[in-house]
Image (cartoon, rainbow, N blue to C red):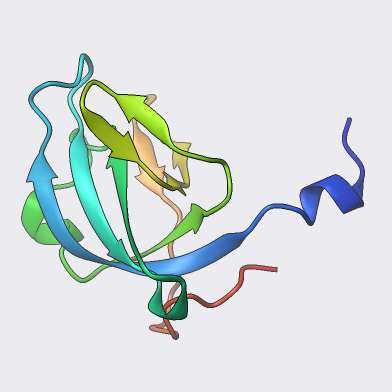
Length: 109
């Protein structure tokens, strides 16, 4: 168990997907996502969500991501943020998102 003080150290923010690229080097099928977090900058992430989303569906979508977990190298790619999701009934990831457009970089409480 962690306490609320440790949880509060996570920087969880809303960002908008600007660009989606296929990630053929990934062992598990994935996309590379370029995400705009407003004042917090533009960051890249890798996401194994190809079973539930097309490139077209992701463009312009707002997502929720953890900003301060450090960089994870996946081959030559550097994933800077962790996009959050939950497993659906088939065991594939469904993105957590907002139901109305809000400012990129908004903090998730």
